[in-house]
Image 1 (tube, protein in one colour):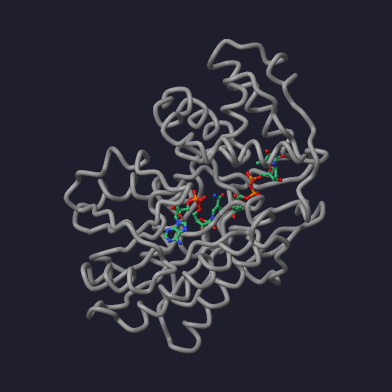
Image 2: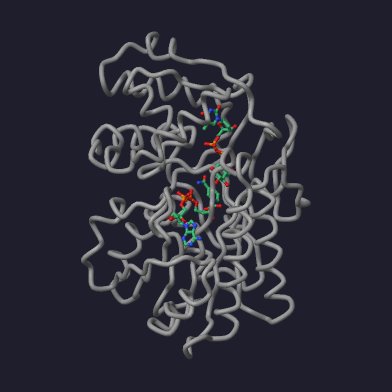
Length: 352
Ligand code: NAD
Ligand code: DAU
């Protein structure tokens, strides 16, 4: 059992990282949480408003590609644990420009592992937890589930960069004996999700009466997990996982993209009084994503039986919370919709 003193949380201003900090910082006043984030387009301090003044929280602005910045954070805080979220995370962006993905996801992870291995600044090295994705396994057909033994077969520059980083993290355990753990999780949804991804994009577009761009046939399948359930799984593995082990995390909620979009139309309709038929009429089929993986589905037996973790939200209950959060947090939406966001939406969808 790991009892952390000081955790460096990389990428804590992003979607999952900020949800993790919003849950764990108030719950664990005995632990110092250091949020180390470069604040790229995906990082938003607005997501951390309610914890920013708590005494066990610090923000360190810095880039994991920069070894000097890492050294500074290690020397200042001497972390015993790392929870590594920081990454370029959007598949479509990796297709338009892969370089940042290799630099942050691969080289950035290597830089953190090196600081952890060296015990830079006199830090102890109790646990390095690496957050990864089910996309490293590639695509499934109609049948089957990803287990921890499934062969890696990534399709996009994003998933290839995450696969590379997983291999490096594992190599640091096998070669240097570092106490690492890895989780490979399915698609998350929930509050504070940047609206370039399917769920928040569709919620905002239905709220605003804009087209709902569905790639290809809309029949691709993803396994959806409410973000707070993912955060609890990460905490469980951080504190109870076996060093060197990998755990798959999933929501047992396979849906086609069209199912997801129809559920959003129904729920936004119920919550705002708009007509479901009008909202579903906004669905627009656009050009498919190159190399679009057909189906992802997770077998989460290992984390359930060995560590006792299970998701608590169904897709219906989690999506309801998510839709309500976006309706109630229009300030957050205004804050993150920078010029950069608008130009990405224009660039991405005008080419499809
Ligand atoms: P996100 O894009 O919302 O956030 C990424 C965060 O990392 C941002 O705060 C950004 O500022 C920061 N960051 C990016 N480059 C950085 C750098 N070079 N140095 C320091 N900080 C940097 O991502 P997310 O959706 O929250 O995903 C977090 C992690 O979880 C990623 O590793 C991703 O691969 C993994 N993951 C995501 C999902 C999902 O559905 N979102 C599912 C499984 C795994
Ligand atoms: O599976 C885990 C992965 O889930 C994470 O590792 C990634 O970081 C995360 O971004 C997510 O990747 P996806 O590519 O699955 O998520 P995205 O929301 O981009 O797309 C979900 C599905 O919806 C996918 O099949 C593509 C489709 N899609 C997406 C967008 C943005 C559309 O049909 N229209 C859209 O506008």
